[in-house]
Image (spheres, helix red, strand yellow):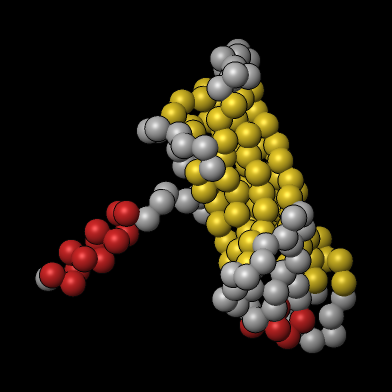
Length: 154
């Protein structure tokens, strides 16, 4: 029972991260064996900000290694976040909070989305970037959402 309580504590201490839902994909390079290289478009809701959805497009490596999950995906990504309902906060927001994270190689590389709050301009700012155990990539993309009242069409 002590082990179970320890794992539960560890899970509760982990940051709340969004999980992505695939919206669509296009093939970019044909592979004779294994899946094609492709660009995938995914959507995820900010787990701490109700009313915000982010759309992430990124490259996925195909072939035999890609099919087995052993390939390293490219560091390029694009992000667009939008207000999709009334914005409300589920707890305190901290600058640089990790909103989304996914492994892009077997062990050493991840794609991350972090959130900042620009209080002066009343705007949420989302940054996507890739990092690696030794050295990250300077390639990144940013999007911003002004925090406005939600005008619902009737």
